[in-house]
Amino acid sequence: MAELALFDLDNTLVDRLDAFRRWVSEFTQAHDLPPEDAAWMIDLDSDGSTPMDEFFTAVRDRFHLPDPPEALWQAYRARLPELVTCPPQVLAGLQQLREAGWRLGIVTNGMPDNQLGKIRHAGLADLVDGWAISGEERVRKPDARLFRIAAERCGASLADGGWMVGDDPVMDMVGGHFAGLTTVWIDRGVRPWPVDGLRPGHVVADAVAAIKVLLGE
Image 1 (cartoon, rainbow, N blue to C red):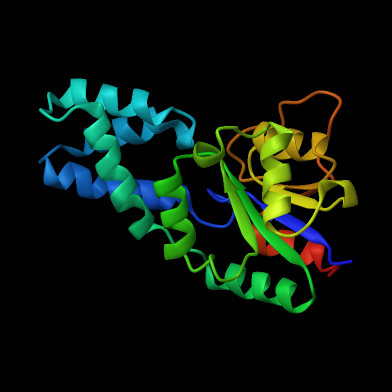
Image 2 (tube, rainbow, N blue to C red):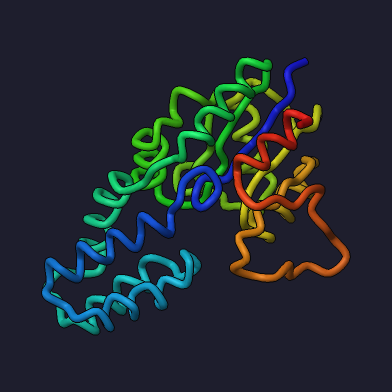
């Protein structure tokens, strides 16, 4: 039976923070804003942990923009996927897993247009067997139901086990653990491990290293 590996998307397979910073640079230039406003936006985003409706409400209010927050958010979702990339080493690693017979999936929180745009623009759509996006399925990580949907889209079952790779200790690691998956935590050095009594199965620096764990290297 083929082994299953599910991957988080943002800051796991793709560098969401880098893309966001580039979007901020474009936004501040378009609105003729000073560097300190760019820094404010990056701080407000808090590495993607601030809900986007709250983020764009604050942006609209701070800069006295005429557009409603929903329109700003929609424009952001149209542009950000175009700024997202997946490192060539990660794409090559996923291809290596496929050639080794693995079933690969993506399980991600977010809006469908934004997340699917990233998957396609980054070249991931042809390298995975399926994905589950919270905004489309109306259930969010760490709820095990989203992991189950992703597994089923890959033609697999959580009952047979598998792996979860991600950078968020709660959404990915706790969620993956209670979904019955062996976990690989990508520790980006952004936040400490917050969960007492539960540890990830493996700790690595990036997705390339995580793929090596899966391949037993």
